[in-house]
Length: 351
Figure 1 (cartoon, rainbow, N blue to C red):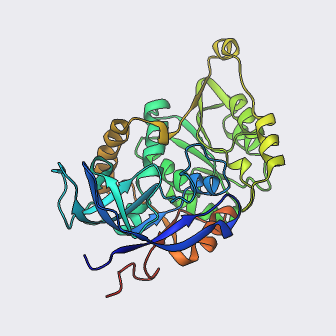
Figure 2: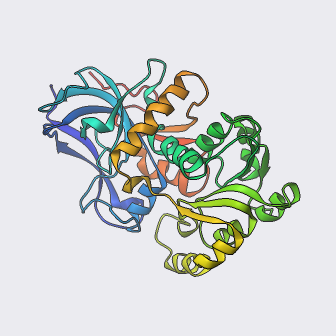
Figure 3: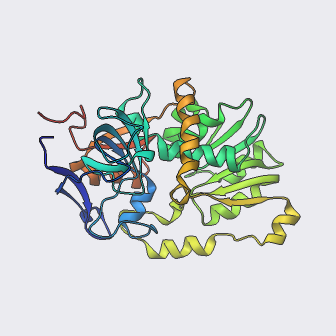
């Protein structure tokens, strides 16, 4: 290996985009059961937006490195690694630490990439698709003929969930997104697009499904969580997995955080029993690894069958991290925002 340092996006403090810097850090040797991966691509998730603001429980200590997923090439094996070899193209998933040109990753958190999958798609794959898969099938028990509401349907999880819904016959999908994104989310599989900026999503859903819906994937909380519970039909499930209503700009808005918490409905157990409704939560970062690995096997099979495919919104170099994050903060993205330590147009290391 010619390089001894790794281009790294470093979180130096909590706050705005100015808290992220590009530095050269020493390349670490992989430990036992680890591999060293030349990361060709990474992605941005809402967890990283929150971590930069100091709002995400489990963020790395400062100065630290964010990055939950990526894709690259194995360049070195640690002791006892037998499932991978140098030169393998892999999808990587880790609880932070992947926004680096060269990152050490536990071998059991690396997954061989399908031959047809690009590095951009690889970086967009594990977090969004595993999250959507667990919520729809393990918690939601999605079956044919069901009705599903997906908030932020143009985001990474939203597109993944929509595609997974379409693998089940006759599923009706309601998806919220700004009107400029409706054409694309309809092409992905949303049956009823709803403009959350000009329409009340609960009213629009009730017009089509007056008896309620079966599953609601809520990434918002606040008053939208209260509406979600009221919009369920008997035996329906609302699955909370995000707090997007708390993140309204590049810096923490503590009034909005308090408001969101105050407005979030907390149903009592007895009320859920009487209503025959289920309220569930999901956080992939706190799951045992075997749950993630099992889902990844099924998801890679679905990718190979052509039933799911990540949608890439845009690709940015590490040096453009502020603009890339703004793309998500401003709700401009349709699909996944991708980072690369190299040129955004080629993602190939300079020689």
